Image (cartoon, rainbow, N blue to C red):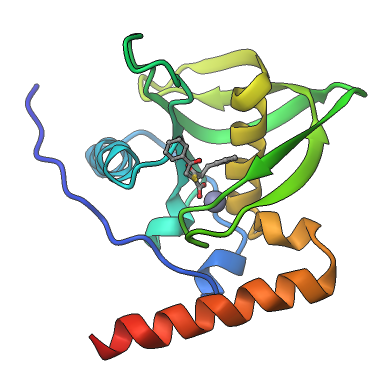
Length: 177
Ligand code: K1U
Ligand code: ZN
């Protein structure tokens, strides 16, 4: 079925909605399907490899991602509803993360190298998959968003404060235009 997709504005840190624990999605409705389409469209347009619902100001537990890097490979758009990490590897990996809500700021974050995640698909059925590499980093970054946590929360307070001040300045500049 053909559905109209809408680009949704992405919230910039600091914003209280990015610090809020998102609520469980109770069922797959037309609104949820529309939100999934909009989130994928918004993520690809940004461009980004992931996006969580709170980043567009919707406080429910929904995220999208596509970490296929090779432009000649087929895309793999994924929609994860109520995702939860059900296993994490002891092995850790460090990746330089970015965030669409904290533009042009990057920092190394250490996380489990592999995670197994359970979620609900758009067909209402439960899915489980083990992720590694960039997919593992991205899915953990997005689940953090659903819990009101940003990648800068892993950094030392001084560095986090510096980034927050830059974002406050960016928001003031954008508001003036
Ligand atoms: O959640 C978000 O803010 C999206 C974020 C996801 C992410 C990036 C890096 C590590 C962990 C999670 C982004 O997509 S930032 C943009 C980005 O990484 C990218 C943009 C274009 C091409 C490739 C990557
Ligand atoms: Zn982010």
